[in-house]
Length: 331
Ligand code: F42
Image 1 (cartoon, rainbow, N blue to C red):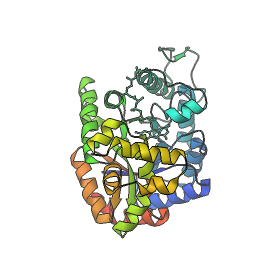
Image 2: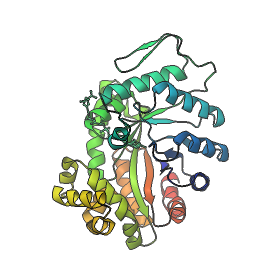
Image 3: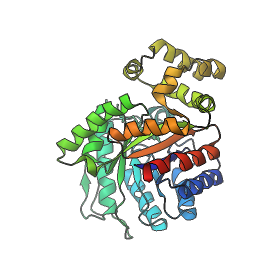
Image 4: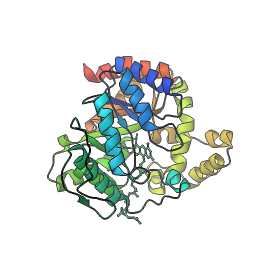
């Protein structure tokens, strides 16, 4: 099992860099930086991280082909790979509909857009000759970098829906599955496997990452409290079939969604139940986390990504997880 950690660059740069240095020392293998235009820039953050670290793999988790043209994504990761040779990975997905809509971008034919973007990024990184004639993207034969690119740069596809999961299985070097609960991961794995088989590949060709919401603390109660705000947002954004899978009434989720939209935080967070926390996070003491991660590992997950909130105090929880959970899987 490999371990990744996710940071949302809402915090000041130095803080994300500082947390990553700490994570690297504790044996985390990957750092993923989320990409939304309304947070700090993902590549500026990654460049700083690259400069201050030596071993940890790093990349956007995830960018999208609507806001950033695939040749620019290829340029960014190729440039980054000069600063951190052999450590760069590239996460790409359909993008977040809400933030895309804020800037007038429509998420048209996402499967095709992601597929073509992955193909273009790979061609650009490999400096292949000849243009690319897709339905969403086209490049001419002249679209080549004037600099050599250190290869490979593995591409991970961020996926939730069945079709995107299949695409990730057939095309990705890795897949980032946005889920924490074994039932959701099991369902996702069915589709990833299908994609893998259709493409005549083997599951071992794909690094299967569970991109979870983690809250770890010495005391169960503290871990739960820290998980609540993040779980409220996940519940509010979950489709009905996922809520039903976990026995969460759709009306309860709608109530939370309304409260969040109206910034009634106490109402929104007060409505988060233990069942919701169980469904949408890996939450608890290090022992509880170990049990849950073991269950994911048995399903075929090969990378556990510790995502927000990580715990009541980010620094303390990175440390606790690094000292008490990671060694259990590495020794
Ligand atoms: N999104 C961000 O914007 N920033 C991030 O930092 C980020 C991180 C992240 C990490 C892991 C992860 O798994 C997802 C992450 N996301 C992030 C979210 C990601 O960008 C997507 O929003 C998320 O994965 C949800 O998308 P999805 O994979 O479920 O795909 C969507 C588009 C979907 O509806 N898929 C359906 C499916 O079954 O997979 C298929 C849709 C379909 O069939 N579309 C048709 C087609 O041809 O593409 C056409 C439909 C039409 O009308 O255009």
